[in-house]
Length: 246
Image (cartoon, rainbow, N blue to C red; front, side):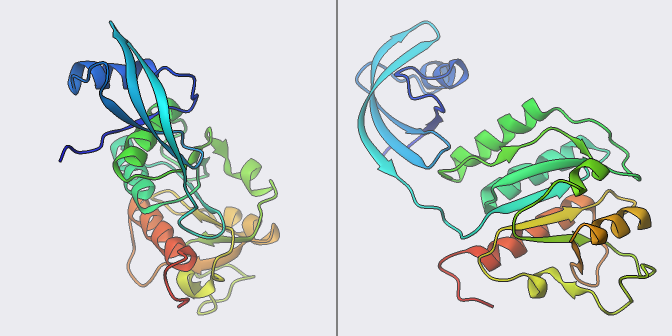
């Protein structure tokens, strides 16, 4: 039985996007009459058949639509400072998409070593991981934003900031819970992960003033991309419909 290769088609207009068409025709060598499996990133899978294949264009006709239900409850939003080495951020984006989340935001923080990121490349990584892991919904990718601007924007649900500081006046040592313990099951959640040098004390205090709650991810000091992935996994454990509440 042939493997089902999925193609990302956000606009269901009867023609594959150019990059997807190139993969279908030149790499997989599909022809007129061959079946296609499509996803729109908005919660639907489709079956289709190729009706035209010329040059770099691949035309199709839909034969069936399969609406998908979300695999978890609430909305999972991870906001992080990108790593100095961009390949580590890209690795995180791929793995987090495979695990499952709804939105990425990249933060420019006081201690950031990277102040810009190519969201177009991040989008491509997200799409590839979404297809590989058969996710019906594509995570949103936001442009990089300053920490101060992001923190004052209203966020739905529960909001947490992960940090390693023990000298926050509003946050005495020993009072911070593990993220997994602090979260409520199935709720919309936003989690902030700082740069390698951590969030500054000023940033933590600003987050607390804007309704965020301090949490930790365990006794080990984690690299930014590792901490971000642990945070996504924790949010998934609290949000998946088929897992008994912890």
